[in-house]
Length: 575
Image (cartoon, rainbow, N blue to C red):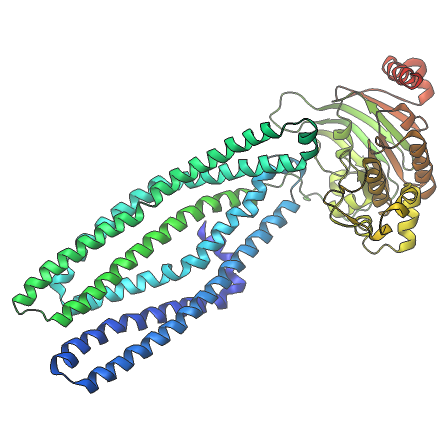
């Protein structure tokens, strides 16, 4: 796992090397200081040589200053590495998300994907920014301090042979128990993000139903779960410091007792014991830094595992069979098509769909709620892949078209309309990035956007709030239709996208579509028969199967389902 993430540091290799160099060099200069201090005590102070004390004192100050400069450099370069690593991981993860099909996205909750892009990546980048220094400093400091300690007095240094294994065992036990708790903590963050996202997205519903107290209770529950999971994890993690201090103070007491006996016996000088204690503290501090690095690494691995689940997600819609094809006419053929969202599901969502749509035709699709109307049209641009049968466009299998070209040739105005932050013009240019003002106005006339655009504060330069909250539902639908028309698609799919406009405006939009794109294949999903009344053919879906196909007149005279829908809507209109 670690090796996979390190590849994202490739373009920051220079800063990584500089950070490691500064850390090691800083450590070496710091380790020289106790030796100088021992000389000052044993030679300068013992002999009363002030010149020697001053000379060694200046050398200590010089080593300290160099160490300070190197420390600042290591902090700077480590921060660059950490932030760069985080940026590259986020970029890779977001790029992978863009290649997800709807089926892939269904494997994760939106809140979990947000957490994996933010909190989990931040955990890893902070581990590098703050963990690089102790990770490289501690081993160098520990080994060097051990060598110097054995050089000063090898008998006294044997204490480390007991202290180091004891601390290592305690650290192992802590890491072993805390690792699974970090994973649970990140999952708890997913749930908090989900509740917050749902509440903010549906804030109008919450207010209108006066369910604020209920939402507060839901949030309190998941927030308490996060607090409990965090407390369990950190309750074990904080044992690292007491364990370290226990070993450290026990070691110091042993060394003072043994060292004092050696001084009384004349086998050791006071300056040597002073220098030895300095190295003891550095060894123990090194062990403490290593234990903290292991804890950071443990938490990072829990987050890294979650990120790799996204990066390793197998893309269900591939381009293995792609040829150099382009959509020319917009003929669409469903040949005994079956589809289900989950391959392991027992029943098909769509069953035995056989339908021929000629290029330039207008086709209406109606049916009851849950009859899989939206699912049917989402197969055309390969938002999902069919399970069985064949789906052809211009006589070629749909999976032989390059995805980019296919989805550029098929424009969809989905049932749930989405506008992005930015101006009206920015949103319209999603259909065509380099669209001229004339092209924008032409598309807006066809979609009846021109009826309200002048009433907006700044016309096409009006800033839309997130999701287009400052325009009505009908205005939002018309903007989305205009955006789709700017693509000049070969196939236009309107998935119940005129439900929020009145019948008169809908008729104008229908006329605008025929006028602006007469040769395009138009598929209209609707609940109202008036929306598909003039279609070349109307498809009735029932329980994921085609019940009947025909014109308005033929279906009205022969199909009971169509007759029932028509009569119910006529009665509603009369009322």
